[in-house]
Length: 224
Image 1 (tube, rainbow, N blue to C red):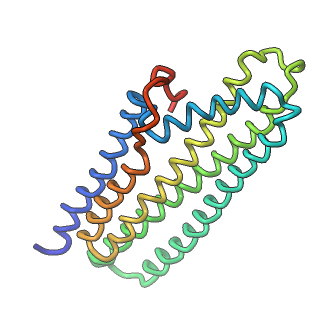
Image 2: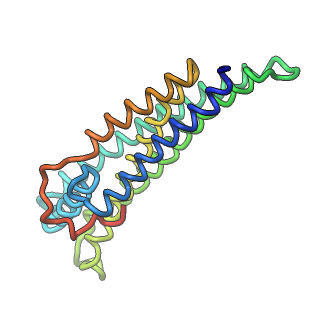
């Protein structure tokens, strides 16, 4: 079987494996949140926000420092992603600078680099949004209750901001994960599929946690 034919068969198969796993994970988060790391973290984030806002004078510094660390992590991922986007854009531009009619091999190579570029571009945009939500939460979490009319709803709003920031950061990280099999696609479609299978196995053990218990499943994950 020729190599382009293997690409047409194996590459979609690898993408189906990755996308199928994340669709299963999303469904599992909604149905069994306390058996996933994402669901457990979402439940505990809301508890943490409530605890921080009950006594802002005592816990305000801790809350801001925690959010600052999250902002730094998102900013680091955004900087790395945009740097890799620039590098890949240069590689794509150099590969197309020869002029003339491109061969099938050159077009396929351009598609590979563009796919990786798209992953890092999505990761950059999501991490920028993550910084935005964390910045809003860092201000809202220390607003004195006497100045807030809807103070009963404020903890829920701050928790939703923190959730959105965390979800954007997680999705940005997943976009970077998708770049690994696409990078191996440069070498062969077989390596790409093998990487997809290995990554799904690793992600399963990182995403699923069975020992938390099911006592809070009915609380959900606050809008994953």
